Length: 157
Image (cartoon, rainbow, N blue to C red; front, side, top):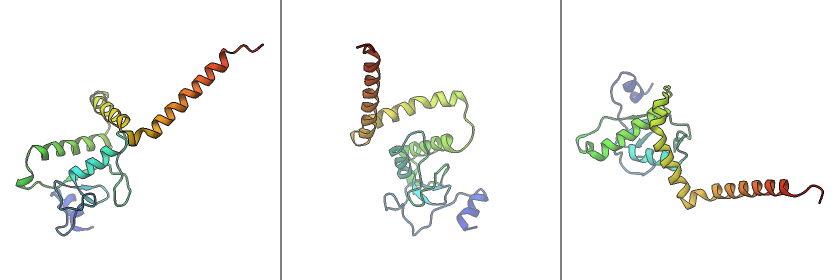
């Protein structure tokens, strides 16, 4: 067991290696988070990776491609204790609530519904991401129209 894993198991806050950088932004860690696969990322970077993908699916680790179902933030330094850090920590907590494996009540699912609808709407409005979706919708409408058209024609004609 490595030192960061043993520290996390002992209940201490793990810290990223000092000579390492975030593999997403290639900069020093800001609000560092360790994924369940043991890779480290900036909290904001890994949340962006998740926001880019499907809203109801856990994101994959950018390094090893394993599904991330838990993000553990490191202890914050004084310079990272602001409103933006609190927002990012809240998003990490939200991510962990959704994908952490704990059963969620119907009330929690209903509370998350506006979030998922906003994400879905944002995804539908993105022209670079919706082209396959628009194509599928167009094909579905054409199939429905063809089905209705064939059922409306007289079989004796």
